[in-house]
Length: 79
Image (cartoon, rainbow, N blue to C red; front, side, top):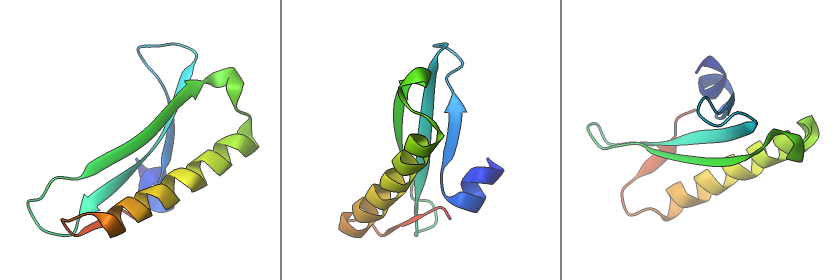
């Protein structure tokens, strides 16, 4: 969770599906009481090395920013 707060994204192994990893980010509402939205991608561990995972995280956070900019409800990235 600290990494997500610090970097804007998090990478975690899937607890229910061994061999699967997920990278995710949160698009938090800028209005109190409005729900946050999570955006993530899951993939087999062997399918992405560290460099690919870093690029995936960058693309995911950039996509989250674009979604926040397009959203009807004012949203912002949690970071």
